[in-house]
Length: 591
Image 1 (tube, rainbow, N blue to C red):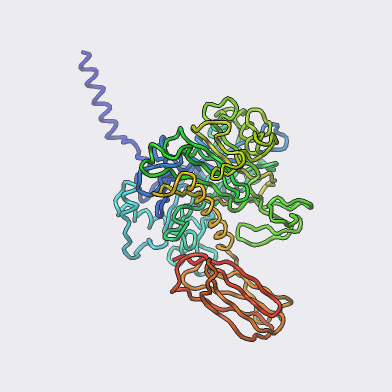
Image 2: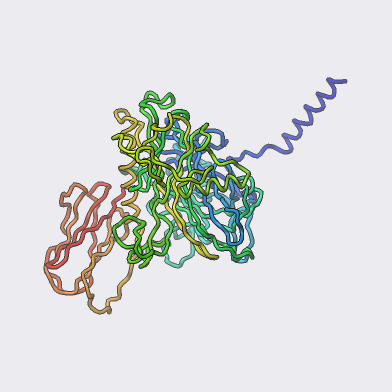
């Protein structure tokens, strides 16, 4: 009798598996009403990593192991998990609210429409999208074997998903695209989806309107935020093979949801569990000049990375929130009073009297430490502790970090230089072990309808024979500066000038456009008086590459094109010299 019952149960299980097969979460589906796929790989340069449409990143598809593989195809990993997180106060509510993604997710995929409808993850458009500019419907053959091998798919499946995402690219929801016909409407037959010039672009939109998720995360209620993420990378260029960019746009949509709320004293933070190979032998640190938080190995060798030396990993705040400048302050540390400074919008348009906030605090957690410990999940205590950390305070106590060398309070613990062993560095207070790190920026205010955008570069360096574990930190810092210089000049807004405009009142050298470029770009300038004018191109070593203009010019507005087809990829400088004016600007050639 017992055998008969067991046999019947086995048959029922088999029958259920046939009738109701388990959903393969990351499997390919050319079209689905369930919001698939929920994950996408960024994997065309020297880094492979994974993003999920709920904001969690750098973790594997099973969410049980590190997902940030570096170098590519090495099978070695350097980050276990990462995510953007924020904390804010809501007037009338004494409880700080924290949302975003760490090990747990406070977001669901989907957007909030103009009528306040929350589009859920079950909607077919509530999914993650990935494109590359050379793979499109009816396009030429492109070798996709790299992605196929990395993702466990066939090349046909990879191509079909690329083509579907090209066709269904949600430009109307905020996904970026090159608007070829300049009508502000995405047309897959004309326009090019993604970040212009990028090798791959990933995009998704999420919101915090699932109360069960926010309570499960750190025990607080939703605030009414829409979160748009754009992730992109470049390849085959020095420095850029070892980094990618994250752009996060946060929108206060509490008003359309029917409960207008001001996000007061808000902070945004990039959080990460950096496991450099073996998770139990790591250090972390920060560089306040570069707006950089980084992780590195505590020893010259690592069991996972051996025989390669272990790498270093960095998170660089490239563009911070836009806030009004206060008289007498210099928060962005550029030696200009913030009240008289210029901030940059999401589209790189400058606004007088505003600044982009830099990294305003750094924090870290140490496994097993009774004080510097991870905030608890599912409890408002976790939100309170995380908010303290975002302000540069110790989570549990709310007290400032104290530099053990100076005995002075600081919002930037571990801000010394591990390469030279100068200043407060990791290891002085704690031995190598499992670490988490975070860099934050704030405070600022978001009234209903406000938008804030932050851009972060995630960087790897080292894991190369001959580059030691501390030299890897120097590489990450070098790549950080390259990423910052690139972004500062990469996305200008062209300003058209009518030919009927009166003569200019002052000399001005404009940013080249497009930038980055391949192979040609245009450089414009204006002159209020006639003079001898020279416009030359130089490489990063100061070698003259080309002379575009060397002659007398009357007062006027000018533009010249430089074709760099014979020059290698990299940073170049162009310099305008007149009798009374000299100015130099950077530009980036990417082939």
